[in-house]
Length: 323
Image 1 (tube, rainbow, N blue to C red):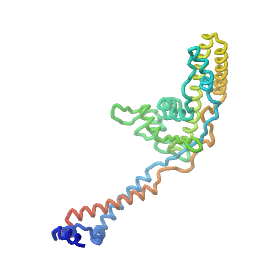
Image 2 (image 1 turned 120 degrees about the horizontal axis):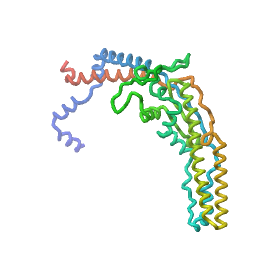
Image 3 (image 1 turned 60 degrees about the vertical axis):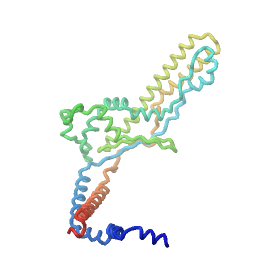
Image 4 (image 1 turned 90 degrees about the vertical axis):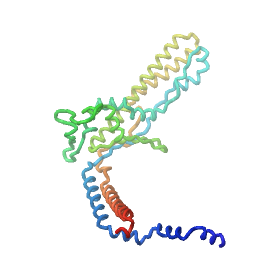
């Protein structure tokens, strides 16, 4: 008690008067807000109307997705047999270690996201106009319309005005950045299933893109596997000709046999990396924009801004004494 009295006496009376003046009076605060209610209402109304107009002018975006499972390919047995016969091979000065076994599913996903794959995809299907200039989609006719300031569909001419180094026609890199935003590839860690999804103002275009992506990534990975396997077979045949050791020749024959099996499986299986569990369909419902949420957030932002303006004006004038 004595310490509290000493602490109280340590501060001059002016300190407590200033502290009392600095305290926020909630009644005064609500009174200030009430006096500025018309400004708050006006600000809220402006933002609400603006949010409604903005939401209405946003085109519907549809998403198509395909659920995929990793194909049960017979694994490349070269590395496995190399470890089995590696001791014998090393005696002949031959290295059969073909490198670490890369997860084909993970590799396929990264290839799918790569610029090289997108460039081939862009050139093959000519999707640049649908990706970079599509403005609206007619659900009755199913036809796309393009922004006339960007692209003239009849003349197949790009008309957008941009600053250098950009050109009227979007480059591959510029198109890839946009495509990366509408494409999503996710992997379920528990099941290992992969979902490839694409978004567009046309549900038919979105579905078509997903189907093309699944088909092409299987083909690309199939071709890569075939090229690698052929290279392995050629290498093994070269090493077979260089050795006269019977045991080593047996090893090479077995390795060549396994690689030939791998090559045959790769050529026969179209679903080389991914098997379709649930194919992409034409979406009937949009995924965005969420117009109700946009309107609510716009209205809330307007109300908060209005209250802030009223309070700033009040305290900038020094409170009631300045009014």
